[in-house]
Length: 237
Image (cartoon, rainbow, N blue to C red; front, side):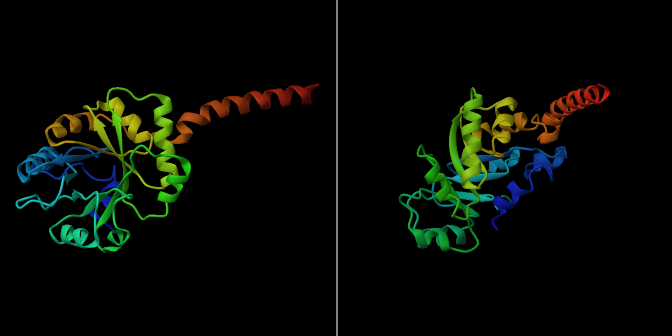
């Protein structure tokens, strides 16, 4: 199991971020994972110092990259040899395009995989994706607004693929957007390294997920009470 998958699995259980700044703050557990997209080791290290949970590079892991958090590499046309080389260079997971990646690239041990889902999200495709052992699926979304319909669509992706969503933010998300994405099955957000600090600030304001019973039982309880009252009236008659 990759460290990135473990981090998603353990969300909300441990202090967020692994940089010195995050450790010094001893902050309470976060419920959204912030992943930085970096073009260099310097950008990556700055993101880690800001508290990023993971870093994704556009290609190979550069020399001097941080080693204390999960590192990912984008290999859209990945071959088995390229994935092995990325793993040996320190990558914990890789992002791939299933239409261009060699099938045997997914057989490399000790490295996770994140599918670049794209616009083709019909039910048959999503169900077929569920057959792949994935750490996450990457989906892009605008960060300025999320409608109920868009939230339902994200839930549909997570449900059919059986994988959490790593959501690439187009724009800088606030706490409300992050909460809506999290509730739709996207507990991890990918942002430019320069936006990590601001995104982390928003992520700290996202509350823990509400239990379904907290949303529904009061309504059902009211209906049940009303039904019981009617039954008692009939018994009195």
